[in-house]
Length: 333
Length: 253
Image (tube, helix red, strand yellow):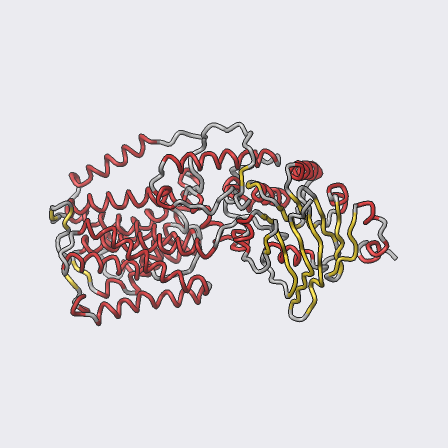
């Protein structure tokens, strides 16, 4: 009797509204695969950074946008991924591609740890408690110098993928691209399912979610683990793209960048994470040669977006391109 | 017939104030029962106790021979009881279709790994769920608003969406908190017909309602609450001519 059985379907199913533009996806992928032929090493490096920061936005958005929890442990997830992957390679000789998945799992476990205060605290209290996570870890990196190299950091060995050491930015690009595309695809699949709807349900009305058999506690735990998983993998990519990590790479400035990517790109938007990453990693590089302008532009952008576009740039964009709007259900029958 | 829901001597106190006092009644399978009473009579508190949101000071709630007292709302929902909320329990930023999809059977069964990889079984399951959700919307006559964002709809339609969400899974008990508020006459008729149909299929319906005509037409049995106590219980005709009810509820002497 405990199973809820569906009412016998007798509805004549509507045809799908539109065919998915598969050729568009194929063309985009082909262009992305050929990109290294056309760009120099510096541009390639920036593209790699954009890719990994789009993952940062994607992961942060799960907790901040979809679940709606004001949790700021993102730089902690990021740092854990970078350090675990780098130390596994530098100290234990574990190849990058083998440590990548365990790295994500590690990040997921840190995510579960952060979920614990999220079950009890709300809003600003949660924000403060989770902020300390990153600072605590940074302190740990500095004071365990025998392993982490302390505040001077640690050099990241050339990543080994299937027995080959990757030395050029173009080679690293393909790793970043493969990982980013896979995690985007996986996240999209999860959002267009019962889990994606459950995240929204818990954000919008916990009492109502519970009345449908959705456990807010379980949904929050899953979301934090999922977020930690993605951001830790982004951290691992960050380490190989940069080539050296220090505790200061994971300080509040890093967290502010993550936050800006999500807010400017768009809360709770897959496209927004990518838009935010492009804007906040490419724009500073373009303005690099004009001293001081970088910070001013960054601050202006953040203020403008928060004032004029609370939904971020993706919110503006989806008004004109409805297809970019996230949906939380799968394919029609 | 054994009652599907049995409420025994439930008492609830909020900061010393008696919200429910020794309330007992039972609900038979396939029955539509209404709870009426003036504002503050304890109707919503009673719903809260039955669905696990309010812990009673004393008394028991038994559902299909299981003692539910003290169970969390999630567990009660999974056991086969669904409710709506007086102040609107829809997910405002989701579309109507997505709202109804949160109420499908086993909505909590995520199958994360298989879903992440979009395995065929998951795709079939999701497609079946969408077809079923559309059918549920059709049943309530709101299939045409499936893709609208729920929070932008008029209040009456939001209420219908919430009801669609609760009946998207076959439950044994439906608790509807003021389902008729804001509905047009046509929508009321439709809702009444659907509830009667569900009852005929064996679903027990308990509703709190202010729209008296709706209650009198639909309820097979009516409980009257006043100041946290049941002051009358009977068929609509009996209630209509009950002295205590006329006095307390309809305000006549």
